Image 1 (cartoon, rainbow, N blue to C red):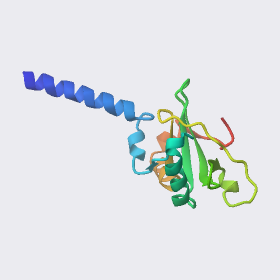
Image 2 (image 1 turned 180 degrees about the horizontal axis):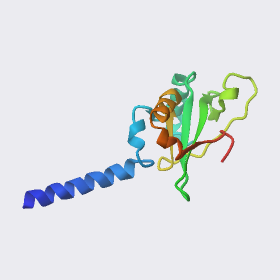
Image 3 (image 1 turned 135 degrees about the vertical axis):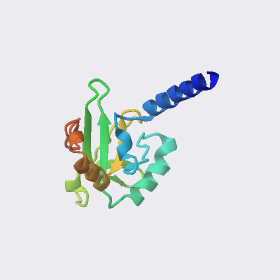
Image 4 (image 1 turned 60 degrees about the vertical axis):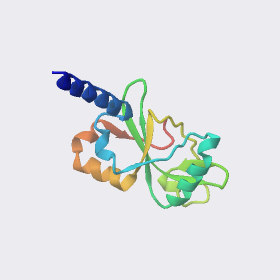
Length: 142
């Protein structure tokens, strides 16, 4: 009997930990698409984000936001860029142009995440029911 209770408690703790790490319900299906980009604008994260900017220069990204107030999920297509000192997001239309609007997107790990765009869209196509709950918006919309 003690073993069953212990297993039950461990299951509850494991589920609670998983729920805390989930950005939104069923986000685990995107696990292979997720990119670790700590876009916090904190000094301690600067070198890592600048390195990621170089690595992912030609890769379109998804910047996903879960609204704290409504729970709605929004995503924006973007590219991560830097000028050697600062890093920012740019829209796909301006990814390779000389003039662009730099977006310094707010980032909180509990509300935001980055994904590889091709992988993300492939999963959305595979699971059409997700399209109803995840809305694409312009990078400049907040």
